[in-house]
Amino acid sequence: MIDSAPMLLTLGAATVAAALVIWAVSLSSRLRRLEQVFKGESEPEAEALRPVMHRLSEMTEAQALNLRRVGLSRYDAFGDASGNVSFSVALLNERSDGVMITCLNGRTESRTYAKEIVAGTSDQALSDDERQAVDRARYGSDSAT
Image 1 (cartoon, rainbow, N blue to C red):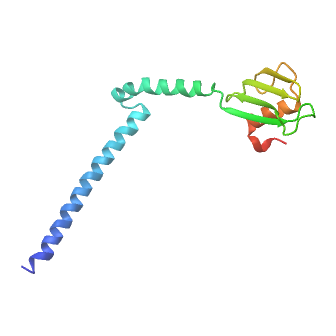
Image 2: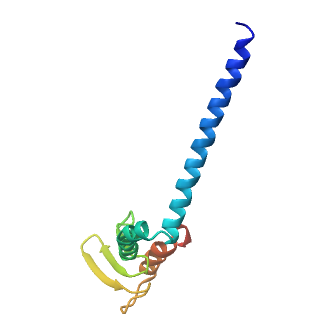
Image 3: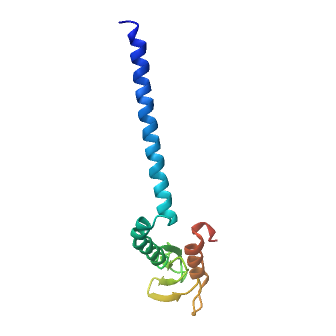
């Protein structure tokens, strides 16, 4: 009985090793098929993925139009209000198109303006504070002075 234990252990190890080799070959075959699909070499699977890839491409293009870059500049517009209660906020997309909203607040009056931003500039003149908000939206808040 003692002599058969090493033989049984060896036989068990060989069985596990054979099962692992079969599993590795199976995984390798699946990987090759996936590579063919993504390279477009396997027609049925590639044809099935075309609508998905097209939709993904459309979504990527549409995402570039989302207003997702925000730059804020706070300041005292009239010199009579403490706490920098006036602000300019730029809301831009990946193409640096969007809108500038400026709210000037003083003790006795408030004014709000909106300006269209195209490629980081506006047809209307931008104040230094508005330019700072655009730069913060385009390049990040650390780039502002």
